[in-house]
Length: 300
Image (cartoon, rainbow, N blue to C red; front, side, top):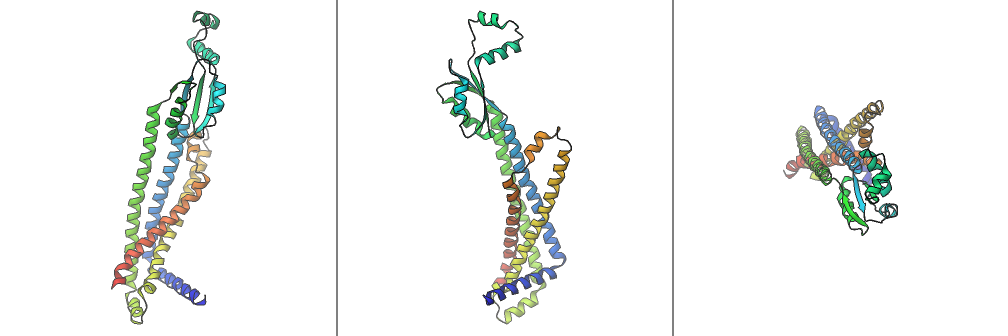
């Protein structure tokens, strides 16, 4: 255990020594990674928020379900409410529908109109709201399969456009993440190579006394990871500041941005996942960049 702690102490001291000697190169690496991870965080957060807005908008879409003659909407509504994708079911009796229709048409003598048509020609109806826009087609198909249902209507084109937009945002986010990761890796690689070249004589001395390549270059790998973690920390701080600013700004105009603010709120899981993603990506970029930097020197 003592020998292990001694090795850890040596690696940490060498890593800190390398960071102190890096000077402005460290600043260049950390600042570049910070900008890239900040943009990544903005992209990831924007994707989540837009998905939330799309889902919130999609949940406002209603599926109109017209039942067979003689079927009670209130009884069937209890069954539909058990569907896991369904958020709300509103049962409308044919009497209520007839009352609303005659009111919209401006008919004052409802009894006379009913008598002329030999009774109420309408059927019971249900208005079904789902939790997400993506679930609308599946719920509509399931409703259509019910024996008591005569017809199911919903805005299929709007739902399809929402789903396509949501999928496009995911691919766009993936593309941005890939480009930013490659750029950050290149910055880390260049920085670590410059640091290795600056300490070239010390490395040669260590090689002459028999030190292994892993023992020599592992502190540089730790430096690359440190760049990524530091950049992630600063980027997370900037994102928190922007989030608080937007929250305070929206609080001053609750009536104007009530719908927008609800969609922009992150869940507790997303609030935890965002910094974890920044640290994970920053560490991975630092690790890959430093490995690429020291691979050439380690083979010599």
